[in-house]
Image (cartoon, rainbow, N blue to C red; front, side, top):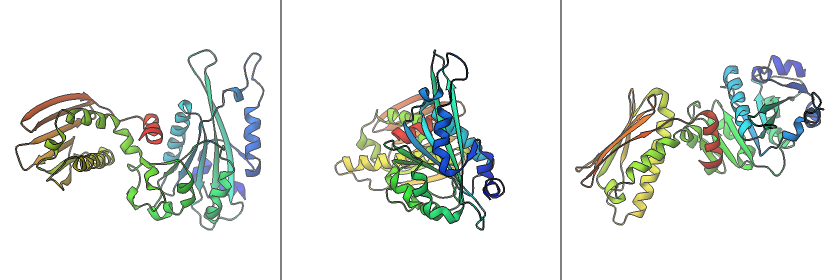
Length: 338
């Protein structure tokens, strides 16, 4: 029945690479794979280049397609080239009536040859297929395969509802950090009922690192109290392909401005509105009830941002190079810094 579950009832599990092994023998089989002898005389065993820094749990939801899952898996494998980790990919069966073995397993390993002599890094993955009948026991069973004393990170991807994802409380409560991709999800992060919401970090937000750096640099030319004085509305034009990134960016801008209000004595500006609209190019406009005005044009395709503002009687303009972080850098930013 294991073969039936792995292929017919679990397309994502069946599509990911690896050698299928009994679950109880997975760690031993993985160890034997690393301890294999050198392929030719003079070459060292791959085990000498294996040095995991973390555990990485990649958890696919029912909304994930086979193509998305394969792309995401390869992305995490690529991430592990820079940040070696043990990857645990969890693939639920969509068939609620699936019978037979509840959890099946594959093992996978890959090594990268670097530019320098002897420069190599190796990663490993355990890929699990499971039925919903095993859901309540999943965390306990998967914990056996985590490398002890290493931080654990969790990426749930494309769950069909925040409730179904929130059901995995054991993962949210035991890991060091959670990453989500709001550009792909059907729910807002705020809808998740989790014990530690502060550990959740958005990849869409992580990708905007250069945007945030440029915006901060530009507005640092003005006194904080003048930036706040008379601010009534922030208008945001969002191209469809940047909707998640700009909304994440605006949450950051709102948070920064609210912190500034707390630091400015006698601030009379207690509230401002944020209005979103469609646009061919990303643009943020700060609207005031006085002579102040500010505009940020973010041309991602050209890789250039243009800023212009007249605040408190001073005018300042600036151009800056911007870009969205690629998948590896965005994942590192969300996991370690964001």
